[in-house]
Image 1: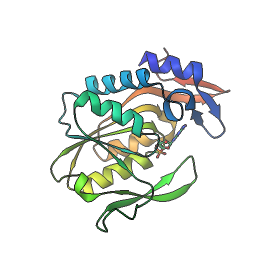
Image 2: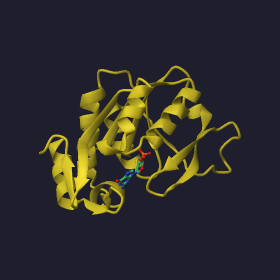
Image 3: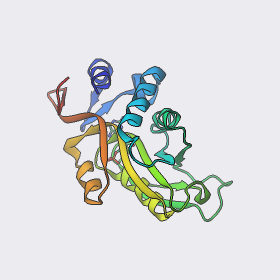
Length: 192
Ligand code: 5GP
């Protein structure tokens, strides 16, 4: 998606270890009209698939999931990184390894918010090694729900997440696909 690729080139900042900071528009300061366009694009891509609910992970997936849910007219649910005391003991949970924080953490979803048999579209800001997206697939499947696909704003192809998800038979669609980060530059798979 050219709009997103152009914005990454303009405002993205490369930090060590293959990490791209997009705090200016995607996960700290939020450019709502841009996020709304991303949501619209996810709708265009996935509208032929059954989608009853959007599932993401806090914090940086929430904004984009919310605007995607708006276009589908369905609710969005986010996995929480800490279990609130108000969450019942039968919460669904799984362990996710964070590439950016270099540690594992548990994520939780209230069981009643994912219904057996419903179709889930997973949305996240980044796909790197695939741990976050796989964790979300695990939660959906533990609830007896079906994963219609995974929609990612920015995919870093060189970290292998796509292969892991596809090996599980999951459809992956990304709006900006980074082939590599080289000499301080982002190289897209399809150059804008
Ligand atoms: P994965 O689990 O696929 O290895 O990484 C995806 C998660 O890590 C995303 O939810 C995202 O928050 C974070 N992440 C991975 N790579 C990057 C990156 O280059 N920049 C930022 N800002 N977050 C990233």
